[in-house]
Image 1 (cartoon, rainbow over the protein chains, first blue to last red):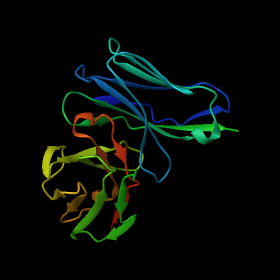
Image 2 (image 1 turned 90 degrees about the vertical axis):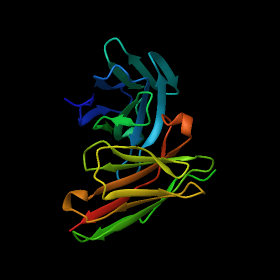
Image 3 (image 1 turned 180 degrees about the horizontal axis):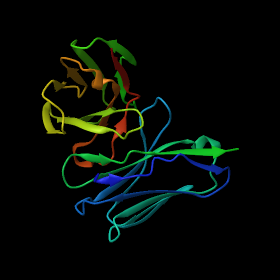
Length: 110
Length: 113
């Protein structure tokens, strides 16, 4: 079993819909939870990070962490075609290493 | 503020050859991490450098080695290339105490034939 599980998709939704992306994990030592966006043939771009449990909002994006369930989510409101990309979750304990999910490919249909 | 840059963009090598990939960190960042990303997969951590020393290493063999220079730029060297080394190689920079906040370059796509 991988430390971080993420459904690869693709997830296809109409423009304007609310998108929910999720990751589960097994290592209770993870303290930092990150979401990255990666467009085709580009490097990942950091969207948000959260320390420990709770919610964090940035514009149309909301990140949620539920450490009791070992489950994290990224919500995208009013989705746009430009949001079409692969979304990667990453997690970190107190050491140096980020552990990544496989990424979910998101397609927003105009 | 200058972002993370990587060179070259693309590279084709033959099995058994050696390759050097280069990375220039974002201004002000002192830590560099290297990742290998296979198609359809998340990045796999290779190693991290801080103050010109390897600070941590993932599950990669010794033929993957690196350097960090005083200006915080970095190199990834891979010896005895294998077909499975074909991937996107990503460099990310950060501050030492904020490695949860990494900023990536565009990557180098390596093809081994």
